[in-house]
Each structure stands twice: as structure tokens, then as C-alpha cells.
Amino acid sequence: MSTRAVVIGGGLAGMLAAAALSSCFDEVVVLERDVLPAGAELRRGVPQAKHAHLLLSGGARVIDALVPGFLARVYAEGAHELNAPGDLVAMTTAGWMPRRSGTQFLVGASRPLIDWVARDLVTRDPRVHVRDESPVTELIGDAKRVRGVHGPDGVIEADLVVDAAGRGTRAPKWLAELGAGDVRTEVIDSGVAYATRIFQAPAAARRDFPVITMQADSRGEGPGRGGAVQPIEGGRWIVTVSGTRGGEPPTTVDGYTDFVRSGPRHPILGELIEHAEPLTEVCASRSTANQRHRYDEVELPEGFVALGDSVAAFNPVYGHGMSVAAHGAHVLRSVLAAGGSTRQAQRSICGIGVGAWEMAAGQDVHFPGVRGASPTRRDLARRAFVDRMNRTAVSRKRVYDAMVGAFMLAKPMSSLMAPGVLLDVLRGPIDPPLTEPPLTADERRRAGL
Image (cartoon, rainbow, N blue to C red):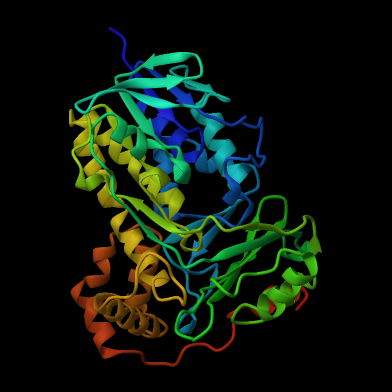
């Protein structure tokens, strides 16, 4: 008797879920409500795709395991392989971090390219069938088991339904209608807004140029502001700036340009775009709240699993969404292959996102005007520890390496609590933080600075 899995959502999380399930089911049907483009193009259902997306090594390696050949293909399409932290010019709350060669990496590519390469490779599997313009309207089943979905052509029966619909998921409502109980939702919303423009990089800086990123700082009285320049395919830079509630970047060309020059914490972004050719208008987004559906608190029906942004969606500035989705798909395959239940898989998937949630929500809760929660004593203590860790990492390699590994989701967040790391944090910094971005003389010359 043949088996079938249905995946709701044809974005990156949905494609990774399909790749994970294709070895466990005879047929995997992916239902996507939007029209899927034929190449690396933007689509309506992924508005955040217009902004900078860094694929972290911890997620990239997992994607490459789920979708063999993914990294080779994305690099062949022009993506950049960037060493971390060697090719990362990063300003934390402690100041600019030093650059030294590391064992992690970043993939510098546009989100449409990442999505397209994954979809193209996954759909070569004859067991995977993608239907776009196919919205799902409800789950079929009861409080004990989900048995399928109601799609555009009626009921589609399934042995497993995976919700990978993203931030707009309706699964909590559908589960309640089945009598499965109410799924509690947590939201931490700093009100951060994004504005992005794509530029053609100066000819000499189209390859071997670092990512430059500035983390917003919640320690001042006003809104937090940050930004990033990310090299992507086609010799381009995607330049995204952000501001929390009350300090949102303008969406006009002139307003955006003024914000880039003066809004973030250092003028380097404005200096860089002075020598780059704008290719697009300004794109804006406000869909940035940290949102988590607490599937770990309810007894879900068998035959249903949620992953990716459908479980936990993070402020995109932290760059964890794609990688958490990849880890979730990998865990789903591992649990099912070992004969585990979908409830076991869901608990494991929820656990994967805890560290990323605490990192993102634990930072955003401190910004003025945050909605959904106020900083607790634990939040304040955590921020004080993170501040000291950031200051220490500038001059203590063991701390810096631990931070990079955890941030890249290549190592568990618990690695930050290793005895040697904690000892170095207690000892504190040796040197003061850098006051200027650590670009090399050659990088400055090639960028026209």
C-alpha cells in the first residue's frame, strides 16, 4: 500500500520538508498557494525575500545533506562563500569585532536564488510533486489523527501533513476546529522595520568582499538602528537598514539614502553606497516580530507536524530562520526513519528553535516600545552576561570562536556555557573594542573608500 505525505507551503521550509520526507514516503505532495516562479525571482508570499538573508554554515551544511549538491549549485550560480568570522565585519553592542580565519562560513546569496536552487533540485525527485496556486483551507481528521487536507480540488488524503506555510500559518485555527485544543502563541515585537536597496558593486569589489553588519543597540534611550551590506550573486550588494519602533527607515530613495548615511551606528554603509550603482527602488517590510506557536504545550494529533516559521519565526536581522527550518526538516526525517511518532518529531522540532528564540526575543525585548513582553530580571541578567561576553570576545579567541559557532547554529547554545568559555568571560576583556570597521587597505581601495 502506497504512502503519501502532504506539505503545506512551497517555500524553502516546504522544499526541505519534501526532501526529508521523500525517503520515508512513496509520494510527497507540496501545496503552495502562490504562483511559483520559474527561476530565482521574487514572489508575493515571501515579502522578506527582498531583504538581506545570510545562510549560516550550521544550516547550509544541513541543507546540503538533505538536498545533495545544493551548495555546489548555489556557488555555481554566483553565490559567495564567506569565511566566518574572517569575511565578517561585524559591529556588536561592544563595538567592532576583530577578523580572524574561522571554521564556519556564510553563503552570500539572494533569498530568491536560495529558494530556486532548493526547489529545482528537490523537484527532480519523481516522488515529489509540487502544485502551485493550490491553497489549503482546512485539515481533515479529528483530535486523535490528521488524515489529510482540503485543497482546491477537494480532499487529499495523507499519512502525514506537514505545515510549512510560514508566518501566515492557519494551522493553530485548524487544529482547534478538530478539537485538538488551543495552541498558545507568544509574540515579542520590537516594531523593527526594514528598508532595502540592491546596488551594483564597484567592479573591483564584486568578488572577495566581506559582509558588513551592524547590530542595533537597545541600550540607548531611543530606537535601535542597524544595517548590513551583503555581497550576492551578479556582483551586487544588497543593503538593508533597520530601525525599531519610532526610528523606522524611510521608504523613499532620498530618505533611505539619508538614513544609510546617518541612521545606523557608523557611516560605513553610506560611504560604500556612494561608490555603488543603485539597481532597484527601496523595498520595505514590517513583518518582523518574533512569533512562536507553543506546539510543545499541547497533545497534537498524530499525522501532523509543523516546522520552520510555522513553529517559530524570528526577527530576520538575526539570520536564523532558514537554518532553523533546515535543522527541523533533518530532525523530522531522523525521527520518522527511526520509527518515532509525529508527536516525538514535533517536540524535537520545537526544541531546536529554543536557542534561536532566546537569542532573538531576549535581545528585542529590551527595545523601547516593545510589544508582547517587558524585560524580566532574567532578561536583564542575560543581557548583562551577553554584554560582557561581547566585550571579552574582542580579545579572547576561545570566547569569540564559541560565539561564532553558536550564532552560526553549528554548535548548541549550551557551548557558550563551557567551563573554559565561562572562565574567560569571568576574566573579562584584555583589549578594548575596535572603534573602526576592520576593513583591509585593499578592501577599502577596491570599494572606492
